Image (cartoon, rainbow, N blue to C red; front, side, top):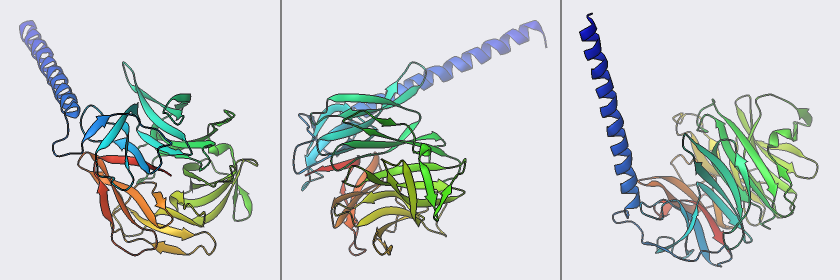
Amino acid sequence: MSVRNRILVLVSAVVALAVVAVASVLHASARAQRRDQAQPGGPRVTAGPVALTDSGRMIFRNMAWGPHRDELTSVPATDPSGPRTASHIKCLRFYAASGTGVCLQAVHGPVSDTYRAVILDSRLRITAHYDVPGIPSRARVSPTGRFAAWTAFVGGDSYAGTDFSTRTAIVDTRTGTYIPSLETFRIEKDGRTYRSPDVNFWGVTFVPDDRTFYATLATKGHTYLVRGDLRSRTVTTVHANVECPSLSPDGTRIAYKKRVAGLPKDAPWRLYVLDLRTLRETPLAESRSVDDQAVWRDDHTLVYALPGDYGADLHQLPSDGTGTPHRITTAAVSPAYVH
């Protein structure tokens, strides 16, 4: 090839790369502009005061397109599809109890995003923050508001496969005592101390005694419900094939997603409830795969997210296996009920 032809090839390549770069920038700009525009036919969202002590409210991450996308938003618990009041706080995952909130946020940098967990007081003021070593996944606050927990993916980005790793942290919001990973806890499995390099934890849910919690333990291709003790720093296996547990308000049952054989690998879960006294499992009346940590609205009703047009929609159904699931609002995720 002559020098002239080489120069022409080089110039052509540079021009092509420039066109691709400009197109990418324009596409990203147009996408961002669409996100800032109100969602056609979507919920009405306006800025206003949001507090974690507003009794009778449901607070969640708003996913409707517009200037308040990703902000913590409040609606009456009795009218979840009604007009939304949006705060200025943006979260990827959120939960709250007794006037304390935990918000998992993206911190946008010039090259890549990082993530952090912030502890919020009742008026959504940040009282503490912690680095999160991966993509936020789950968040919970104890019923008393004393403890907060969160899970992040540090390898892979889905529970559906086997090639992933998680990191779960717990913090005492009063003293600041911070446990960066549950992997430091001693594991009791089948009456014996258990050790394995592949151990993962996720999906913490707390008992009101400010000591006990439940979570998922994964090892060697299996998952287990474990009961944890914050004082002794131990976890004990309780039941197999349990993921993303959620303790009922009366403390007697665990709602969870169960991996069911024969379902597609990318949608393998069904919702179940486990009686902690008898270990009896009850399948719930939801035939779709639910990749979420369900929330108890009360002792009889569960709320959970399913994929929607703008990210996720919230659905609810009875916790006793009866009834029919139905959608309660669109473009919403990570709900918490303020009682």
